[in-house]
Each structure stands twice: as C-alpha cells, then as structure tokens.
Amino acid sequence: MTKLDHGGLRLRTARLRWDDLVWEAALSVLRNPGRSLATVIGTVVGAAAFVASLGLGTTLDHQVSSSFDVRRATEVLVQPESDGTAPTWLTTEALDRLTRLHGVVAAGRRVQLSEHTIRRTVDFSDDGAAVPIIGADPAAVRVMAPDLTVGRTYDDFQERNATPVVLLSEPIARRLHIGRTGVAVFLGGRAYTVMGIYHDVGRRPEAMTGVIVPYSVATTLPGAETAGTAHPDVLIETSPGAAQLIGRQAPLALRPEAPTELRAIAPPDPATLRQEIESNVTRSTALLSAAALLIGTISIGNAATAGIAARTQEIGLRRAVGAGGKHIFLQLILETAALGALGGTVGVGLGILTTCVVSLANAWTPVIGLSSAFAACGVSALAGLLAGLIPATRAARIPPVRALQR
Image 1: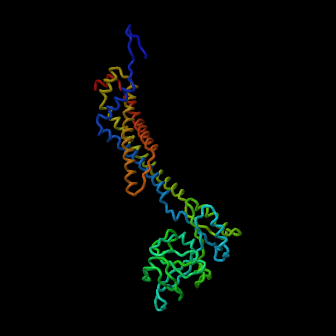
Image 2: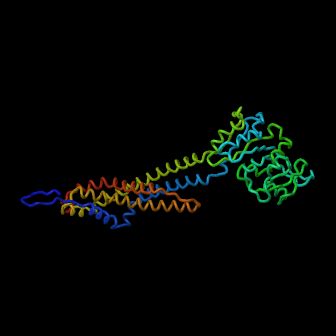
Image 3: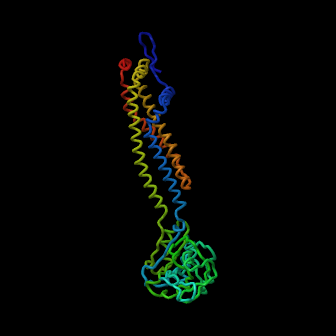
C-alpha cells in the first residue's frame, strides 16, 4: 500500500476494493430494475435471438437426422441408360452379386408396363379400370413395403410358378368394389386372385395408382417385350447411410462388363440437408443477433451518457472524499457490463424458453448447447462494457469542484 508524507502526516492513497466496486455496481443496476431492463431491451432481444436460433437449428439438425424420410433415404433405383441394354443385368446371378454388397438389405426386379384394363368380371362389356401394371418379385415388393389393409403379399412360390395373383391399392379396389381377398379380377381375359389390398407404400408411390403382380407373370403380359412400353429396373433397400455408396457400386455389381450402361438413382445425403439447414439458420441468426446487440449496445451507451448528467453531484462527492478518476471509470464500466450481462441472462432464458416451446409444439426433442448460452451472456456483457467506455471516460474527467457546484 503506497503512503505519502505531507508535513509529517502519513496519508493513505485512495483505493476501492473489488468487492466494494461490485457491490456499488450491483446497487446501481438494481436500484431501478424496471429502468435497467428497459435500457438493455436490445441486448435481451439479441441474446434471445442468438440462443433460440442456435437451439432451434441444433434441434432441427437432430430432427432431420432422426425424422428424415427413412424409407426414401434407404432406397436406390437402378435403371438402364437406354432401352437397348441387354437384359443380363436382371438375371438371378446379377441380383446375387448385388445382395452380397455390404449395406444392401433387399434388392429385387421390377417392370412397369403400360395401362391394362382390369375388370371385376370376365364380361368385356364391363368398362373396368385402366391401370398401369407393376411386375415385382417378392424382394422388390419388400422394398416397396406396401402397408396392407387385408391379406398378405405373395412369396417365392408364386414367383417361381408364375401364379396369377395380384395386390391392389385401396383406390383401385374401391373402383372395382372389392373389399376382401380371395376374389378374382380379370386382366386380358385371365383370372387373377386378389392376395392383398394395401392403403399405402413405404417407397415408390406410383404403386398407389397401379396393381402389383409377380415379376414372372408381368413378363408374359402384352407389352412386356415391347421397347418403350416396358420399363425394367431394380429396387434396392439399403441400411441407413449406405444409399450413396450402394448407388455407386450397384451398376458394377449388376453389369460388371459395362456398368456405364446402368444408372443408379440414390436419395440426397441427409448430412448435406442438415448442413444446408444449419448454414441458413446460422446466417440468419448472426445477422439478427448482431443487429439486436448493436441496438442494445447503443441503448446502454445512451443510458450511461444520460446517467452521467444525473449523477454529476454523486461523482463530485466521490471525488471529493478521495475517489480517483480510475475508480469512477471502473465503477461505470462495471455498471454497464452488469447491465449487458443482465440483458444477456434474461435473453438466454427467453431463448431457451422459445426453443422448448417451439420444439414441444412440433413434438421435437429440444437440444440446447450450454456453450451457446454462456457465449450469449459473455457477448452481452462485453457489449455493455464497450458501451460504457466513452461515458465512463467522460465521467472520470469531470473536475470535483465543478461537479459539486452543479
């Protein structure tokens, strides 16, 4: 502790302990909490926007990861590049090579034919319904994942023996006035037994407008051998996250001698979608938070500047009893920093509340990073500190005599 000697008197230099400094700043901020909150409203909005946007962005990130259309995200479709591609890529041996790839859950052949008339009776005077025919082996049916209302899907026995059976979608079944299995419908004068009726499919929604028959049966129907009217492909179900890899490997597995003659269509990677959502949310968050914090900083600075005029006599009294300019400077700086921290804390609470309310309203699991909450409080306190630099410097330069004369 420094001591000065003036005519034999030993005087202690004025000092202000940190606990006193903090206490004085807290009293100043809490003396009028309503005015303090009104002063830091911009900081509150900035911190709330920052935390809520980052919280919702992280929540959406996890939501996309868990709720991204799983069936569509695990599907690969392989088609020929041209109608003249040799059919060897549809053989059983080719499919065996494909199903041995790591990440392939199921893979099957499918052929889509042009519209055929399906009737409830053999009477040709019955107009029936003109619907596209989808020939699919049992593995392809598994990939399409029809959600059956009644009945069941056909199996390898019906496929090997080309048994005339059919799966109807509910819209087609209603048009034909069919509500149960075991009844017959007629395609080209041949009777087909209805094995199942489905009201939805997990993949390939075009199946809702057509009827599904065994692949071996579809290849015998009129138009199955005509180029331009039959569209063969291979449906693949993959493990989650393997669609992109299987999309690159499938053409080589199905047609190793000429993989470029096949085209694999895989869904977009959910990670890419998550990154796009994150980048868009982060960009908008940064702009909104920066604007709000700027407004809050200016508001705190203006309030501190106006407060100097109202507290001039207080400042003069403090100086008269021994407070130095740096003490006044530190106290005002700490007060504005406390205002910023107060605004940040309130804003963080509002941001967390907003994130939870929006997430629960959408049946999401809210995900909030503590680091973003602490960062918002820290940035708000820093904004308050910066806002008080100029007013505190001016207050520290006020002469004590002039301050007491006012």
